[in-house]
Figure 1 (spheres, rainbow, N blue to C red):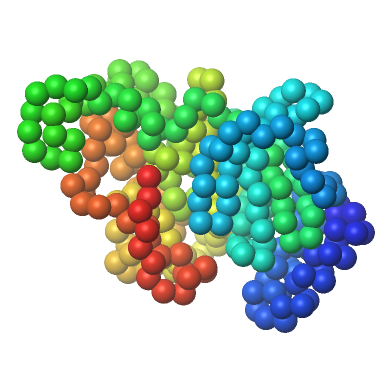
Figure 2 (figure 1 turned 135 degrees about the vertical axis):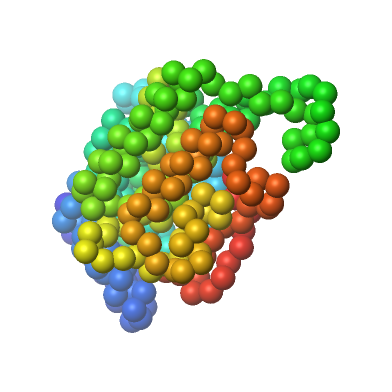
Length: 277
């Protein structure tokens, strides 16, 4: 539960906005208080040593940190609900869906509208990094990787990665959660285990209904997502298929075209194109 001081700060931040976004923040804050075991922390840096940046997105930066007491390493993600209230939903879902092939939340710290999330550190890199490492320089011409040849993984290794992806998504769907942005960059390696990460676009779904938000990454999102603007949780299976194809042969349909980010209607309310990994 949030301490009284943090909850007072959260409520003051939310109610001062007086908008639908503010109400959503209030709802998110209350859900976080109910569903997530949190601590009050005015300065996370006092307890953790920052080692390096692992990546930066539009609303958050992820850094590798070391606990000064336990000496354990974590991935630290700072979220400001005033800038992106939907990131609170990501934290809620990750705390609820605990599986060996899904990145784990170790702790959550709250200070006003700011939430500091300590995630499991996957130091083996992403599947996108792994795919890129399998390209070797050779003779050749044409295409996006002129003069390069792809030496993909062995069949048993490809099957293992696919099996772990399917286990993660099957668990999500059994718990009425759709990821909606499965791609090589969102699969991280921890020792010998691949883990699904980045739940920023994930949502709970009603098995009897359909999702109408146009979210995901073009090239990995199912065609009906951006052509017909409705889909269900099976959109994740399409994304797994394209990701597996990329793993096995080093390319996917449309690789010669520029990858662009799809619309996230919840945040932008209009078409937004952005380069993605």
